Image (cartoon, rainbow, N blue to C red):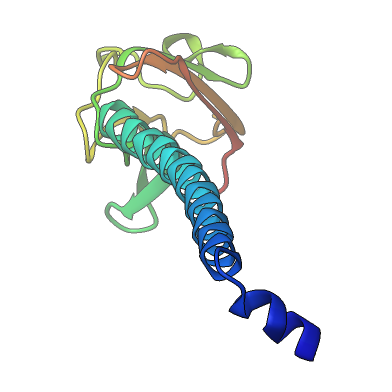
Length: 161
């Protein structure tokens, strides 16, 4: 230990030790700066991706379907196939198949109605179902559509009452 103290007491050695410590501190600071810069770039990339995803979500339509019923008179009912857009974008060029056939050709859809081709954001459209005895309700629905996201939308489900 005394040898070390003697070494530092000699002229020039203390200055060299101070220089070496300063140089070491500079290297540590530069390494920290490079790592911090890389971390910042990675965080920026993540935030940019989140923003792109958020903007894309505002352009997407999200269609679902369900059968709803309303009573009508003694023992009767009116049934509807509701097409609901839960998304923030408009669904266009909608193609709906029921049990594997186009919706307007399915037995349960009354023919005096227009095909549903578009549904606005946060809104719904519906088909009136034929409530005659012996007319089966649709069991499966499949829908395809376009929206402003650039991706084709698709939804498929089994319908229940």
